[in-house]
Length: 198
Image (cartoon, rainbow, N blue to C red; front, side, top):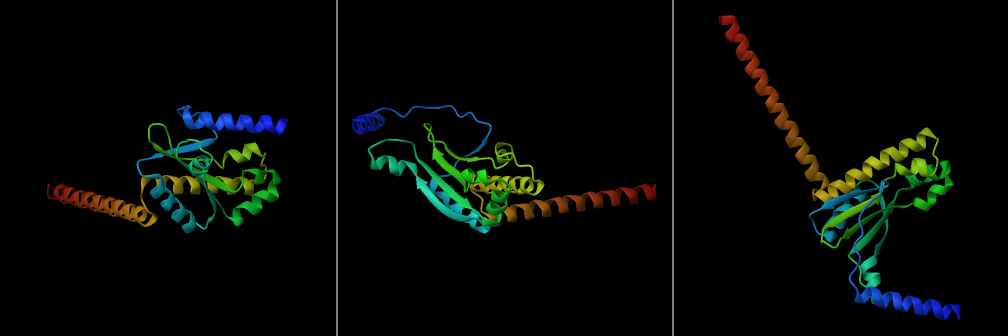
């Protein structure tokens, strides 16, 4: 009897989801980081996977929520979850606090909202220090480092700039700064010469 009621409830729920507009929820959390992008979810995902690989992370799985919803006749906004990890990071953390396993592997959501805006969303690894009561300084440092690495990967993926392009831009900025400094030095030298003549 219970099984029948449960299945009937699910049927009603999915029928309602497929026939009604998707509700809009306000994003409000301190534990997650969200980055907006003007690029398509597919191009962002390709850059994200490439950058994760370049930084030694293993792509574990990708879950396509929208595709799974369509399989049961439901309608939701586009969203794909990218799961990734690195044993050199996970194992020391698990040795410190086995409970952290519930938050591993790391994951990034790439999704579109009701306004057709695309976002990357992920749990900030720094929040795991308090959540799992990490006291070991080495493990705290690991989470601090990986938090910065994941942020840079996500931000670069959202910006649509590959790692090589990002490095090239930094090199251009450094060259421009050097040229500015050289010009300033030349001006200083010219002023000194004028002062000597006076």
